[in-house]
Each structure stands twice: as C-alpha cells, then as structure tokens.
Amino acid sequence: MPSIEFSQFGAADGQPVIYFHGTPGSPDECEIFDVYGKQHHLTIICYDRSTIAPSLQGDAYYQGIADEIAKQVGDNPVDFIGFSIGAFVALQVCRAMNGKVRSLHLVSAAAPLGAGNFIDAAAGKAVFRLAQNHPSAFLLLARLQGGLASIFPGLLLRMLFSSALAEDQALMADQTFRTTMTRTLKTCFKRDSLGYARDVIAYVQPWKTTLADISVDTHIWHGAVDNWSPVAMADYWASALPDCSNITVLDGLSHYSCLHRSAPTICMSINTLN
Image (cartoon, rainbow, N blue to C red; front, side):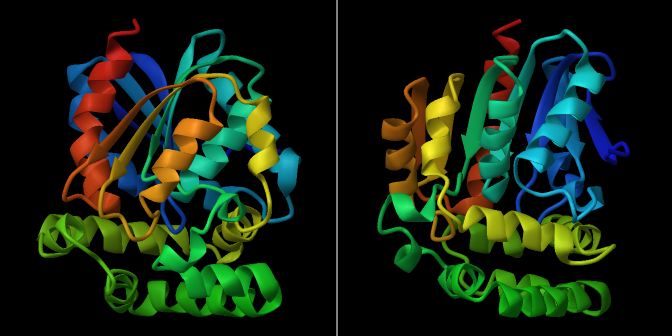
C-alpha cells in the first residue's frame, strides 16, 4: 500500500501519539493538540484517511493503517486518541497492532449502533439509517456533500452544525473554529467522497463483537449533552471495554466542545506514562 499522507503536530521528537480524526474530518482537526503536544513533549501524528485507496476495505484497511504506524514509530510505545467515528477506526486499528498500543483515549466516541438504543438519539440518525439500509443512496448523498465541501464549504458546515447544542454553539460563533472546520471539510472531500463513505458504511454495520479482541488501557471523554454521540454511548464503553480505567463526562459540553476541553488533560495524562 502506498504511504498514507499525514500531518504532525506538537514536539518534533516526542512520544508518538496517533490521532484518528472524525468522519467527516481531516488532520486539520488535530491543530488544537499542537500547543499541548509541545508542552508535554508529544509528537501527534494524524493520518489523512481520505488519501487511502477506497478499494482497501475491512481488515485490510485497518491493517494498512497499523503497518504505516509501525513504519512511523518503530519499536516505540504508541498512544491513540480517537474522536467521534475516528474512535471506531482507532479501535479496529488497535486490534491490528498486536498489543503495541500503550493507552487509548476515546473522545465523543461513537459506539456500535446495534449495542443499544442509540440511533434515535443521534443527530445524524437519518444519515446513519440511509447508510445502513440503502448504501447506494448514501453514496449519492456523500457525493453531494463532497460537492458542497468543494464549492460551498460554509454552507455544508452550517448544515452539519444546525443541530449543535450547548458549547458547540459557542464554538460555531468563534471565527477561528469556523475557519478550521471549513478547511477540515474541504480537506476531507478534496479527492472524492469515497474515503468518507467507507468509514460511515463500516461504522453502521455490526461490529461490537470486535471489542473482545481489544485489551488496552482505555480512557473515555464525553460531553454530557452530546447529541451526535449520545452520552449513553459513554456508559456503554465503560461496560464493554474491560480495560476501561477512566470515564469522564463533562457537564455542559457536546461533541467538538468535549474534544477542545479534554485535549490538554489528555496530553498531560499521556505524558505521565513516559
């Protein structure tokens, strides 16, 4: 497999940390970790999953990411941070890493839809149901989203955040956040919509049985009013992952606001392991 494009943040030669961006998402999302990575001597690497050939699917896709990580970090211990649907990908790559992941931080993590009554509480329920039941129609929607991201990224951003709650609304009022998220959407769809669609279609399929293969010290970070990944998902993670050592539910925070609030604490936590 050709090398995956990636971005690097934080310290140039620090402890390697792999950040798995959301879907839709891109390495631009990881900029918030840059200053904290430098403070705590962490090198934070984010692979742009949209640059991976769409033909690579399933376990071969996750193994390909794992192989790239191994080439990048060598024999060094590695820590993972997974955000939103990126948490799903991070968990699957953990399975392929053969015990080489030291700690796993799941932020606003999207749990398996079949593991509880989650879908009706999720803001993206219509999209998830379309991907579950009519994947061909979902691919058409993904192409439309890609077209909007290319021509009218601000409009797509407003559509995605139309259901934003609590502190996520405050983030949308911040020009720096809007600029970063607009760039994130453009990067996500800069080639085509197939990488984005691959992650969503894989996520909505049954996968909770794969969690039995994951044994890594896991920390959960979730917003109490998250309506993209409903907070009940945090409770599920605490029960489903036997090595879950910590669950932090942040009052008044939703999806992206949880990521922004937890970033400095996550970096400090990883640093204490060195």
